[in-house]
Image (cartoon, rainbow, N blue to C red; front, side):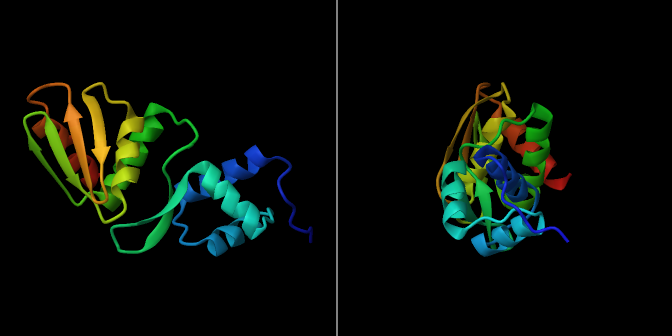
Length: 162
């Protein structure tokens, strides 16, 4: 049996951390360190804390009320298709409601998840979206079309069910 080893480079280690956070629910640094070790990468708690900070990882409350890590800033670039697939998954997990008026859409999320959800919307890069503004549990989305809010709300609610 071979001993676990640390990754050779910081970027490789951080890419693995980002991948684990994106693909699985990671509730704590201890759990993340164990998953890394299970994959052969031994990381100290101090190094892991620094990596999470540099990656922009924060703990957010998911729709089931449990905390998990999410990447808010410094995420690796993803393709438009991957970004849309990720948004569809997050709509199922985080989108509680979507209401529209004119070119505005108000999206409700569990507490602490709005900024993460808004970032996922922004990464899709929809031309129809002028921008998003996020609070704690609410995202306001502004569409370019003065009457585009209801269609965008329906789009997001449609992703919620896929």
